[in-house]
Image 1 (tube, helix red, strand yellow):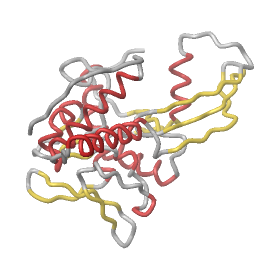
Image 2: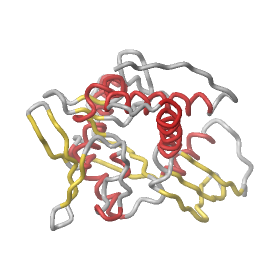
Image 3: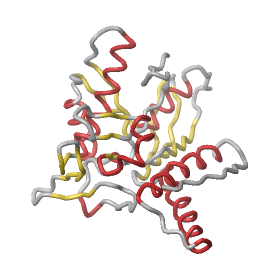
Image 4: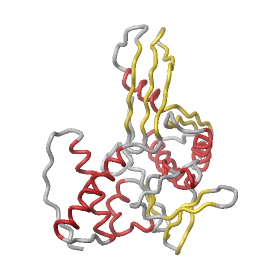
Length: 260
């Protein structure tokens, strides 16, 4: 199984950050690196918004974009684009990410691709799945299959590992924005789902929020420092680095100063 390089550095992971600060929409690590100076044109966490009603969404104080909803229940994200104030839908944001993946996969394969399998959290509602399908169609995919993320994780994990027949397995998948838990049975080399659940609003981003809150409060209570807009997003990205390091190591010590 080959993975596709998604940028010029050969990176195989695409952070779900999208920027509308220029006519050509940008996605991924380049947007993360520019966040501190271009936050008002940037959208992230769209997976926590897509296919949901405004009243069901837990607003994150670090979101640089606004949210609005029409009388018919259509969600919009409000940003400052290259041409002024702009509204985009969560489906628009997801489609830009899927367009980028499609383009890179086609470059890797050397041919046009029309079929795709897209994984979604087990806890996604029908509305969230429908919105994801719409985003995939906007991105140019024709033949689309949605697969629950725990099942996709099981396929990937057991692809090169022998599993005894009649095994019952618990899969715990804590991702960047969502949590999936699934119990399934391996029977005659087939996966039979016994039960699955999850939380589409719980993931690594919640760990970021706790770290950000801790350091933000410590800076104010110990030093009287109130963060500027630029410093706020610098802190957010630094806390993500702390979290990722502490997922591997038992200790992480850094000195970081942003004078802007």
